[in-house]
Each structure stands twice: as C-alpha cells, then as structure tokens.
Length: 173
Image (cartoon, rainbow, N blue to C red; front, side, top):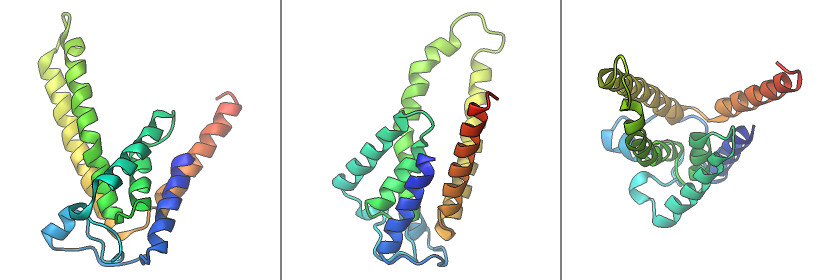
C-alpha cells in the first residue's frame, strides 16, 4: 500500500514538472539508454544525474527494509521525486539493485555448494541462468512499459493487493 502511495507521489512530481501523460517513446539507442522521456522535458536523464540525486534515491531504497515495501517501487518513485524521468528512474532503480544481488550471490555460494547435493554446481548455474534470462526479459518489458505509460496502474495494483492481503490476514486465511 505504501509503495502504491509512493508511485502516485512520483507521478505527481513528474506532472508538477510539466510532464505529459502520453508521448512517443524514443527510438534512438542513446536516448533509450539514458532514460529520455519525450513527455518530460524537465526531467533528468541518467547522463545528468548527480551525487545528490543518487544519494536521495539510495536513502529511498532504505525504506525497502520494511516488510512489504517494494525496493524497486520505492527507488523509482524517489527517483521521479528527485527529478529523474520515469524511464531514467526505472533504469537507475535496477542498476542500484546490481551490487546487492551480486554481493548476496557471492556470500550465499559457499552455503549453496556445501554438503553432498545431488545436483550441486550445475543446478545452481542453471538457476542463475534462468533467473538472469527471466529477469532480463521482465526488466526489458517493464522499461518499455514505463517509457509509454504512467505508473498509476502499478500503484493501483499495489494498493489492491495490499488491502486484499490485510483482509485475508484479518480473516485468518
């Protein structure tokens, strides 16, 4: 529910900057890579982000330590609030996840490979490969989606699922 609220606030920041709802996504590869948004001329792209903006987004990521708070939703909303375009905030959010994911993998590998496992290293490698491919495809789809549509749909989804979860929890389900 909190992530839904943050996404609405991020979209509100974009609107206050003068961002329009619908604009054609860029086709130039450089514009795509830096997070250019034709509907948000005031928003910053990744090639213009500064240390202050990165720190603000990093602090926003800390809220994901609370149970049920989406790390990516929080960092995307914080990035938009800090002045980034929607695509730039989304790209930065996923780039920000890489150090934590690589670190967690390195720290977990000894535990995963310890003992007499039936499959061992090949199973772990297959899992990592499957996660990489599915993650890459999901992120690519998400980046294309946020380049052309508002995040309010995700916000509504977060709120609906959050409320449904609270109802289920209160009913003891």
